[in-house]
Image (cartoon, rainbow, N blue to C red):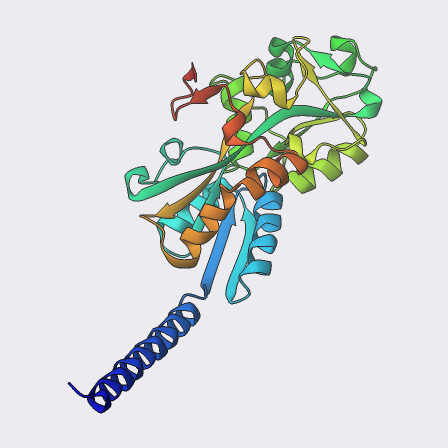
Length: 296
């Protein structure tokens, strides 16, 4: 082969290589643009989970601007029924789907994103900081009606309950009332409303997620056990629940990406704790849908 032929072949080979490189670059660029996350995600339900879900959602969309993400309350019952009907992407709930009548739990996928402790809270003027579990039960079933009966002021007890369908109410009643019927009282649709009313109503008592505690309320210890994250983690404090995000079947697209973000270190190791929740990874015990607790 002469020098001219060798030179021509070399030029041809280089030309083919350059064309191949150009195609690879174009393909990569196209792939990158097609992978930009987009879509609509709507999460509805638990007001106990709402502040965490909303803040995490804001952080998520800051990194994924093409995702339209909405977080709303309404209560756990609403979240479960809405996601079962396919009306929303995610149903937020303080209770297992198995605990809610009319919900087909086998059709939903459970994503546990945090743990929330709950405790009785009273108006500060009541003069109460600790109660026995039996006393809490007697108050909410109407058998104790004045704070002086349990060491507080001579003041009528005003019970503020959550509405039927509330996961916070279900969790509290399962742990405290043990099947007894709660006395009829005014009911509120959200933790936020309860927080405001108890703090401004003399003699008021209700229950709240730890994330709604403020210095305007008195969180009540039970049997001298304080409502703290550490006590929840070991089940020493027994009024707690998982924060569930349910999807109808296996999530995909932006919904799957958001749920993955909820379990990331950014959320579990900082945001969860900063906002008064407990990371699912810090729990020393596990609770099932029947309320059976086992050591991890």
